[in-house]
Image (cartoon, rainbow, N blue to C red; front, side):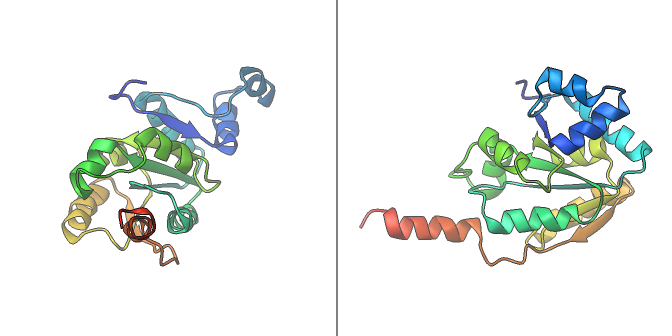
Length: 193
């Protein structure tokens, strides 16, 4: 794992599409015994480019996804409905600490990446260190943001999205669960008395 190159995890459905695009059969894929694929940023750019060339509508979103819960799962399902392939940038530990405070994240980036990648709605997940670079690399037609995105972040993101020629869609998760609420419950039940 090289921090600069990132880690990418693909669903088996997406791998099938990728191998068909590069001319490998399912037998080749089985022989390689692939559960998840780890590749570099260049590989992701090629896969995104080929998926677009094949007529796929690419969707990108990102987040911390710390203490993964139903709201995260529902949000990703809604995001996936906006297109054919969902690319998810999982915020790096440094990025989460910068935006949410030094005590977060609770779960490390590799754990959060694996949990996000395990969702059937997700086609590709990557540890993300910088949001604009992720959007430029994937070059999606749709970028999904949470309605809880802060106004300044939303403005900065809108500029990046518009410069990429994508549409910004805000979706909610249809859940009242929040990570901060879970942390509060855990502290109330298991914290010092």
